[in-house]
Image (cartoon, rainbow, N blue to C red; front, side):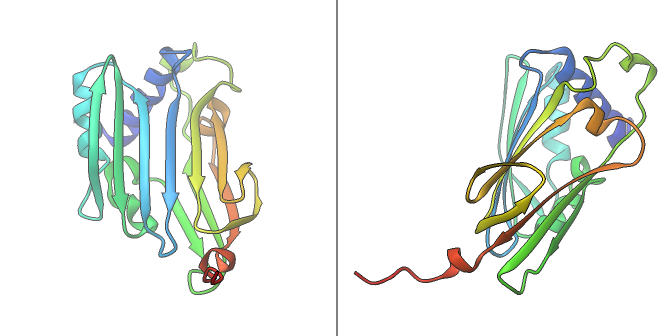
Length: 189
């Protein structure tokens, strides 16, 4: 049996070899209580990769809502009531999520993805600046500060490259947002 790191390595290799469409696209939505949804679209090599994804994206705390596989591409949607419990699903085991300020209007969310060394068979991957993960996150409030691209008042996007995911240490992305405006009641007409 291969480990989750080996499986992630296979997914990374698959999405980079299947360029130009070789990009893992992740669309996440967070609600005001810290739960939400995560939609992923990833290039796969075969049916066994799809079956493995279906197993590894869910857990008792992460529910697989839908899954589809066609023409070498898998699409998966999961829901969760606590973003911190995403780690209970095998695919997200090494992802560290810190969500601060849940009891106030100003909140900060950090996602830390561990890097890993490039393996021998990955020498011929595209250049380090090749985007392998397109991650967008919609928040229940107004973005105050982020190291990503602010798409709208409540949506941020990060494009992670091979260099972000391979090497020493970890790669962290963050966003600070304010839920006060979103929580304020609408004015009566």
